[in-house]
Amino acid sequence: MLVSRFLCRLYRSKPAKLRIYTSSSVFSASVVSSYSSQPTSKDAFVRYCFGRPVLSLRLPAGQQSRFTLTPMLTTVGDLLSDITAKDPGVQTATIFNRDGQRISSCTFMETVLNDDFQLVINDVTHNVDSLGQGSSHEHVLGLDDMKYMVHLLHSALMLPQQQHNKHTELMSRQEQLKEQLQPLETVRVKLAQEAESRASLLGWAGLAYLSFQGGFLGYLTWYVFAWDVMEPVAFFITCSTSMMFFAYYILTKQDLILPEARDRQFLNFFPQKASRQKFNIQQYNELKEELAKVEGELSSLRSAIRLQVDQPQPQRDT
Image (cartoon, rainbow, N blue to C red; front, top):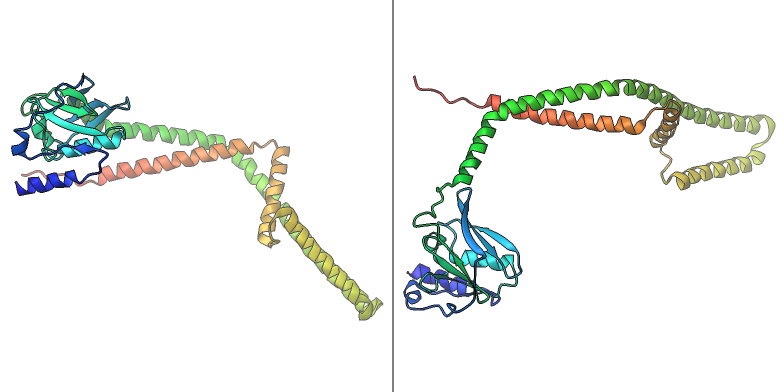
């Protein structure tokens, strides 16, 4: 009794937005509801779904909401708190039994569901019919629950066959994609080699230019002019080279790093070669993405099948 009163005091400490009327079992037996003359509504009922009682209720906001109950764990206070959280427009919420006595918020819903009760929300009374004495236990199954269980059993029994069919379908799709990609892959490899050669050729051309420039400046310095004449020339050539590097950064928004510059040239040459050879890059990318997706699904499916095969079988007593 002390624990029950302590819990009830905790429920009384809730915010004033929701006034949950609580009382002890002795006091509730002597208090008669003052809401018996309030308008009633038929928008509340209890039905079982998958072995759990579900309260269907139309809230003041106008929406039809469902509240799943766990009879042996859910209390009246829990249900009223869920109703308030669902609709901020709920100002008061109370539950009365069939005789008009207010039910304590500490009472478990298993006791409430054994008989008809009234749910009063914002001075509107909802009459809720009970499903019968003892029908609130969680092991009770209805026709819908039996259908659900049969569906689960059917899925469990047919799962290996479904996985086999899915595996066959994915393997067939994988072969089709590989056949479609084979001619495109041949053309792509050829175009990639040409673009690679073009990018490498530019690198060798740059090296040849710098080598020629250094040799020519050395020739002019030692054999034609003196260093006093060539020093300003070398200075302006250095400034021009720095300006070229800066111009590359302005145009590409990237530093002139040789590997990145080489890759950039490759990406510039490849579309040009592809357009000349009428190679559809978009189609190739879509096929590659779909093939990767199919291979990922195959890998996941094979892992699931492998787990089922590796499961230990129960030993039979001999």
